[in-house]
Image 1 (spheres, rainbow, N blue to C red):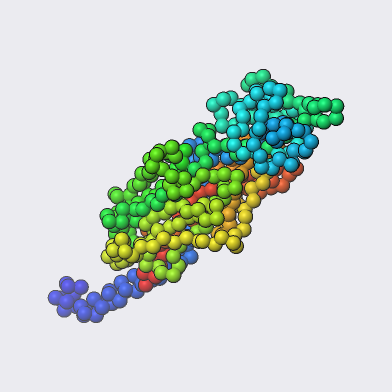
Image 2 (cartoon, rainbow, N blue to C red):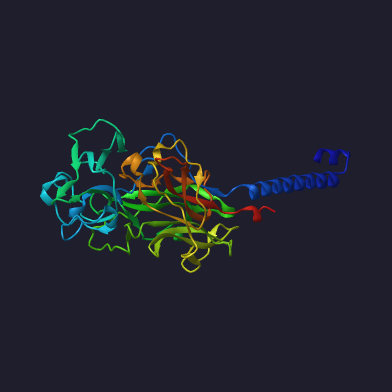
Length: 425
């Protein structure tokens, strides 16, 4: 264009204006297209099933929360009688070990015993190795019927048989659920807050579950905020979780951690955002306990989008949660199989649902495994972006048969990316 102007060919001003107009039109078209794509794109992200499932890599477990346990009714009451039926024992303890029978041949349940049922008068029990979190590999009863897998037992099988007390009273063995805290039971969730380094202008960019010292934590990924919603990728890191143990003298139950029990074993399935003010991004996360439920809380801090700076985060920050206690729908996990046996887990939970950690099904697993499992895969956008919310979800698989009603599934985190579409034109 400069050559044309000097040589006298053409009008430089006209050419320049035409190029500028074309550039503006192209830019506006690109921004409009990007905005439309951004608005239509699902900003939610969670992890699907890996292939394969690997313990301590893609998933972890709550262990020995409620577990199948065999006990004779004579040892479930204070008077040593056998005048009741198994279903009468829905909340009791082991009172004694009468006549040194099967109770003396297995590890005792030293906690509460719940929801007993009568299975059969004669049973063959294959106990698990001492280093296992299981009690039994299988329980055989009747004509080739099994609770658990029909496999060769690694040790001698215990014969368990109801017996007579007097002429007319039979003392029957009951199949119950044992709720026992101990070194084999990992049932703890961290209640301490986890915040990004806001004084270094860092925000949360990802989240994952980790188990440290038998305690489940929500660990955050953080990165330095840059102008216009960018993240300095060289600063992205997983912030270490607090390295404490439940037995530490300064650690308190209900303050530092929550213990799952038969009465308090629910977790709320929510997606926590701040829809009333979109000038906030996620800078922290924690669990609280509401009405016995683990409930997610998310920390939001105000920011300047253009400058890429948090605005006085010590002042302009807030904790947000879904404190809906009364209008939640329970996602029931009754009689489910071990989650890793599922080919896929396509069913996803809905917001404002909740579930209870419970035992696996009797038919397939002798009620030895706690379900659901915990998904410990990293949940992060690549490249990293600021977040507008965090949630907890469950994915599982449903089917109906006479032996089970699906698989126990996985509980894991999900994240919501910040909506950049309002800034795109």
